[in-house]
Length: 54
Image 1 (cartoon, rainbow, N blue to C red):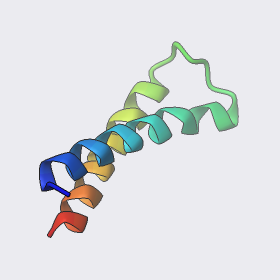
Image 2: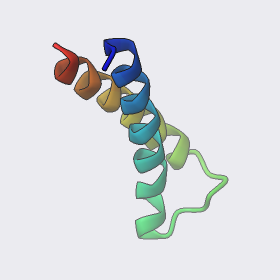
Image 3: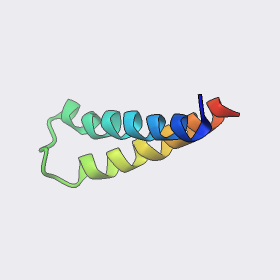
Image 4: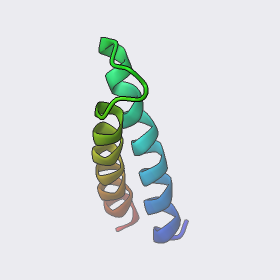
């Protein structure tokens, strides 16, 4: 699989998981915490996708 594809898959999965995490403690969907955690999840997903591709 292409490294670019793995990075995009990692970013997508990471942002979805990161956006879901604040709902575990009851945070509102329209608050700032899902945006922050989604961004952090995307960065982690990009890093993991990059490491898998190398």
